[in-house]
Image (tube, rainbow, N blue to C red; front, top):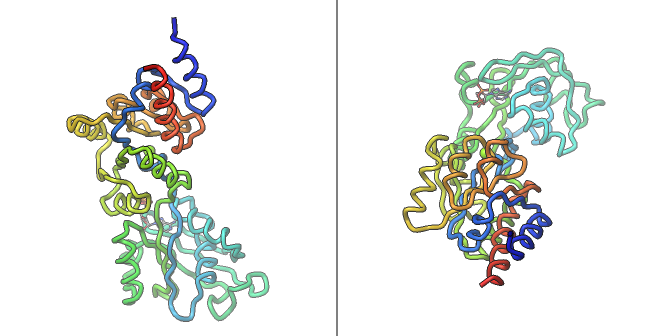
Length: 309
Ligand code: ADP
Ligand code: MG
């Protein structure tokens, strides 16, 4: 028979948005030393966002973003989506586009339609009607043999150190502005990490992304340790390393490539919106897709099993 306490706490878990697939793991959750989070899709949204804008003197941020969003209008690239989203959030009216060409792996070229009356903030002084602009990354600059000025170079260097990518706007064969793009951290992640620290649990992050990106996200979220540039097949080795240090370790992930680490960890926790493979490899599924439920799990485990002793 299922002990009463277990039955009660499985029900409580369900009420708290957790699906318990393995009761033993649920019991072990109260003793966890370290919780390792996958970065992309778990702590971050898996999309990019504009975090900084650099303009040249005669060019204002909103004007520049409206033109960049226009040029990116027909692109399906994640970068294009981020730029359009930023223009949208700022409530900018984006000019129309007459011609558009994607320059594969580099950026876009577009002929922007400017009607001063229809496009507040974008007038004939900044962009001529029918002017052709380019938007693209550093490789587009190399392709077109364009050298950014010292200010834009400094902007790009600083963004690079923070692990952010830079995309430029070009007019008349000259870089006139740029935006920096970064991983968008999920709002819930901040509280999720704080709550675990309150419970005296150490928090680590695991990612295939670069050292710079991992450091930037870790610092922002106040994560204790990170492992960067980890190949998918090596994710579980990091869990083993921590266990070899005598730690009881949970892994929180969403992807196919998190499955071996979820299986290997003492408590494998899948984020609800994750892939089937992740869910099937996990001991607990966070149905609400909310990383804050990791702390709730530890709390619930501590409460339930204290009663049992
Ligand atoms: P990835 O999938 O790594 O972004 P791509 O080949 O799609 O690779 O693009 C490589 C680089 O080219 C991007 O990092 C960016 O700098 C630039 N790029 C490509 N498409 C666009 C676009 N639509 N807008 C701006 N930059 C772009
Ligand atoms: Mg992921």
